Length: 252
Ligand SMILES: [Zn+2]
Image (tube, rainbow, N blue to C red; front, side, top):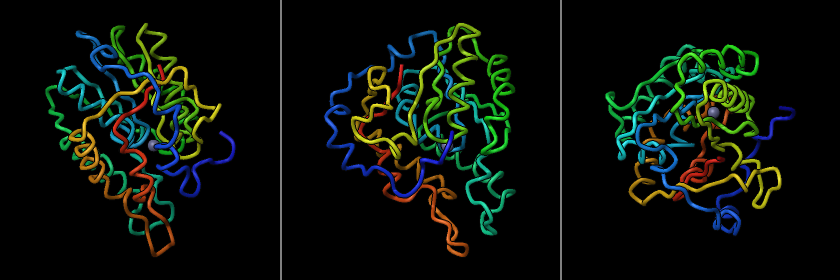
């Protein structure tokens, strides 16, 4: 990644809501995406990506009774640089707990959902890509359906997770789909950099969106910045709302 494209408030929700291309994306049903007998593996660069990108998908998987493996790549300790309110040690403890609470709010129980923490350093995943790929290869099975952040999502960790997941899935013969998260921030409606031909929509009911919103509220650290050092929250209300559309998108 070159310059950081995740600056400012990004493309407003209203612009996406008015985007015909997005409105007309073909839908895909989750029981087709993750067929009976398959396990879904969600690879999250930071604690919150599993909910922001796939909180609706997760609810569908829970309802369908599919086994789910969540791979938490980092503990998200780089979200508040220089903050005394949210120092690295506090983030390293609290962000995984926030994830656990969010998953509980989505209805995930421990029988259906297993969880692996890789423990890589936040913002340093590109340098550990080979290590991550080896980790994933050791844990993936051929009939897994992997959901990773998109290789061109605009955050270096998201991109490295996308690349490592794709390579690992290919090596074991598993299927891998990609989830855009920060894309909604930097991309524009009709943006030619987005692979719209590969994009499919997973529809979410109003109740599922409400649950996803409730789950996202568990990420207290991300909803708060640090006023003492002028640090804005990672997830201000408009950024969060943009991720709470009545659908989620996957790139097949
Ligand atoms: Zn992230």
